Length: 363
Image (cartoon, rainbow, N blue to C red; front, side, top):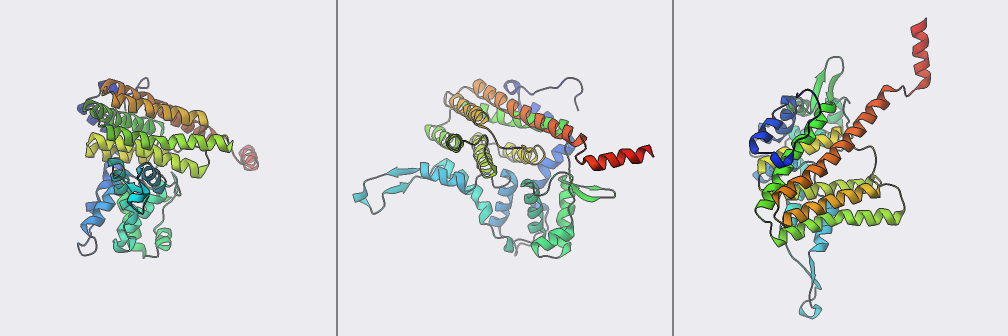
């Protein structure tokens, strides 16, 4: 850990060697990021799992928790409909396949893979990961092989093996007297995750801008970004102060799709895999307390549009600067929420129990 004043990574000066240095600063974080992708560590019989199914598992690990679900897929699909003369065909619309559609389709592969055909240990492994990713299991909460086996209708042995695998990968930890629990990250861990995210996304933005993205790629980026515009209009029309839970899920899908698409354009698969792990840890351990308001949504949307403009102008420096400003805002917001949770945790929630404790100490 670097001591002294807080440091933010400057995207404009990052080189590959610096990214490796940042990524390796904390061994425990590096282990959590990289290990979950080692699907091959499972002793999977070839007759039980096909190559396509293993690839689907890797997609789930590389991209995270089903980054783009049907909301964005449907949104992009509607954007790809081109009107043609109804007299030429019985169909008024025809679908045009684009790189953005290919991204969505590859992400949806995860949801089409049958759990029944997977080894039970792998089913339990992904089940636990999904519970943590969707925050049904939160930091510090226990994970029991008994509970997992009942939820899946399997024996305790594969559930126990899956838990051991996740302990070895750093997503779970064994605590004396408590058993196995979901890990807890501290403030410095969260800060470092954002530094690593900025390093990777800043380099990707430089790469994409440096090779001058095509008109089709820019069009697809704008199409993905327009999902936020739709949410802003929806929130304004509802007259509610913030997005509700379902709308926040749509926001997360759209936001993740935007950033993932740029990483895909950069073409660095290792960076994409590492970033997926980083974002998953941020999602789990630096979760937002509530929905975004209109001002926040507009700011995020403006940041995305500014980045698209920089990419379209083929300006690597401007693109990296956009990433730096955007992630710095997100980091500040998440750390503020983390600090607020810490302050609230330090204050007794049950006044009666607190009074009883004080009386006990005085007697």
